[in-house]
Length: 71
Image (cartoon, rainbow, N blue to C red; front, top):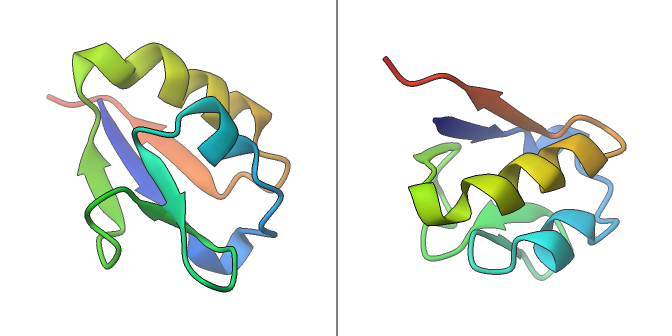
């Protein structure tokens, strides 16, 4: 699966980084970014992180995280 972030919708609530700290990080302003890929807007989700990323996506109050099936 592929994960897309929409930084303009992020309110810096901290849920995604709390739920999936190996996948999500924050800028100095508290806006969501990917760990190790701060400029990327999309990233493939490793199988080992799928459960956590899915949970973070479901908990995001502003839908700043989207998941797409990889074909």
